[in-house]
Image 1 (tube, rainbow over the protein chains, first blue to last red):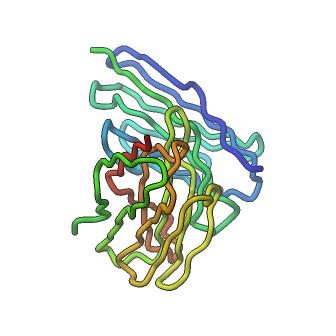
Image 2 (image 1 turned 135 degrees about the horizontal axis):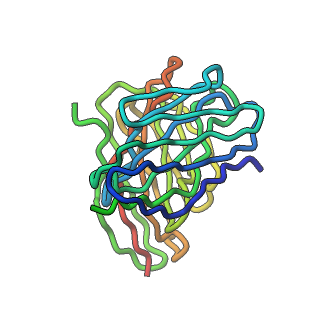
Image 3 (image 1 turned 120 degrees about the vertical axis):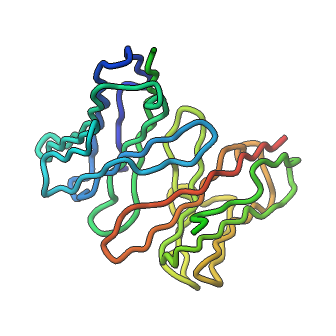
Length: 113
Length: 113
């Protein structure tokens, strides 16, 4: 079946450094790729997303890149801060326009002060 | 708006018991979802609904039932609880209409002993 692979499963960085999380998807029809941040004891919250007709999107310290040919997309966080510590999930739409998503297994990011 | 609310926050069930996890959203969203999240795993879709009176199975529907009598409410029913249903359950919603962002509730932690 279709799946989304996410790496690494854990990531520790020093405050102020950059963090990169990578995902690979298998469904060539996927056209929407959100990233969610989940803080302890809370539900996931969307932080950035990208559609298949765009190669890169930025929002302040957060950016997402998409390589449709290779079927992978990445989350980049620059100038990390302790409050960035959380679990991050990538997801890919099941086909196009279905509003259903396949989630990656998550990356636990720790920003060390 | 309260967004997506879920009750209870935590519950312990004995094997064979039944219970209903409640989910309500006040954003007039058409689409609603139930996910389960197991340790180290991504979110798996249990059931979803595209509007009142319409529900459909996701990836892991066995052992669960849902109903959608109103736009706001989407309860998840466990009829005969099993240890394999120990998990954290998240309800989510999105408006549809080409807006893909899903909004998640805070989750219900369920322990089946």
